[in-house]
Structure formats: C-alpha cells, structure tokens
Length: 90
Image 1 (cartoon, helix red, strand yellow):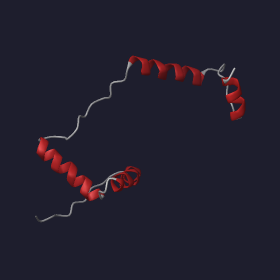
Image 2: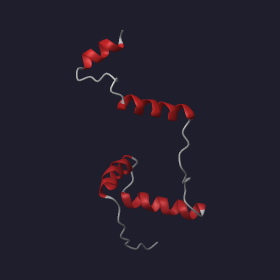
Image 3: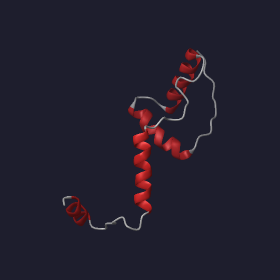
Image 4: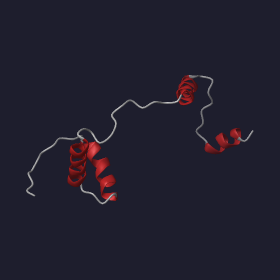
C-alpha cells in the first residue's frame, strides 16, 4: 500500500489536546486520522452521529438555577474555604 502526504490545518489548541489523548490510546495523530478515514469509508459516511446533544429538563433547570444564583447579589460569596464548609454544615 503506497501512502501520500497530506497537509491539514487544525486549531493549535485542539492539536495540543488531542495528541496526548491519542498517544494514550497508542495512536499517532496520523494513525488516528487514518482510522477515522477508514471508518468513514467502511460506513459510507461519518463514523459517528453528528447532532445536537439532548439535555434533560432537570439538567436545563439546574443550569438556569445556577445562572440565577451566580447573578444574584444575594448569593453568598466566599474567599475562605473553611468558612464556606462551616456554613454548609449548618
């Protein structure tokens, strides 16, 4: 099997995050890209779903509650962890 050189452009931050991930799986970046391409051919498309994640109503409600607490002037803020833990133990 002959190979060909291909240049791709990816975000430098993404590359720095993905290299250790692939190395942990025993793959180089080149091998991971080859794996993706082979799976794309095998499946005749992307080898994974591309979709918006579906979040539960409970999670969305919790996120909204957290945003309200974050923006509230009535929310207690801490700079001392021991004080925070003491208040939580009440």
